[in-house]
Image (cartoon, one colour):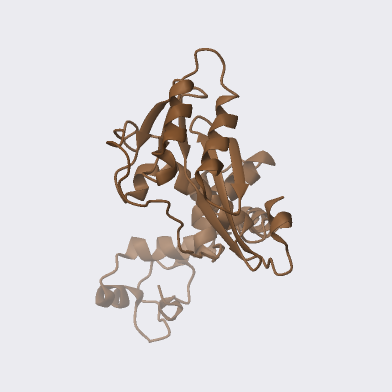
Length: 266
């Protein structure tokens, strides 16, 4: 409601609708002209007079956001606050950050793709079907390769991520996205398995995951292979989401000028 419509009397004393306002008209006449209920008008006046209950929380949210270098989204800010004993819902954090412009810079770099067309035999079925929840560790793994570009060159990261906790089981990084990068990562991940653990390993249709070396490692450790549909990144959303958070918090908005590739990899 525009302040020009506010009566000279307080809401509690405004029961007399003949009190003049700035336009020299009774409140009832003005409300009738704009089609607003009288109860709604006075309720809004009282609401505007109440103190902002989010003022204290906004300070905490803003501090957590700034401490991240303005890189955290609302979920990461919520986790940081919860770790410090601040109890509030994630949706409330999202509303505060959106309302006050606390949004990290979004940069969509060209996505690296290892797809080189159909090779080998028939691809495994998509056993995951976009359900990336696992009830226990080492039940469902996802993997992919992502590219980092800095002035010194390009680096490629190949992790395998456990869908139970969302954390990497093993990873390799190098300057060439060859099959050895993926195979070494898978061998290191399999070395962490206990007797009887036979996870599903889900990937896209990149050539790394269809070459004989990868297939052999999966067979030796009784892993069940699963693959996304052709050119369908949502089918591997758990890996894509991990890369997105990693780059948002570590890569975007930072200047790596003068950083060597060895330093970047470390």
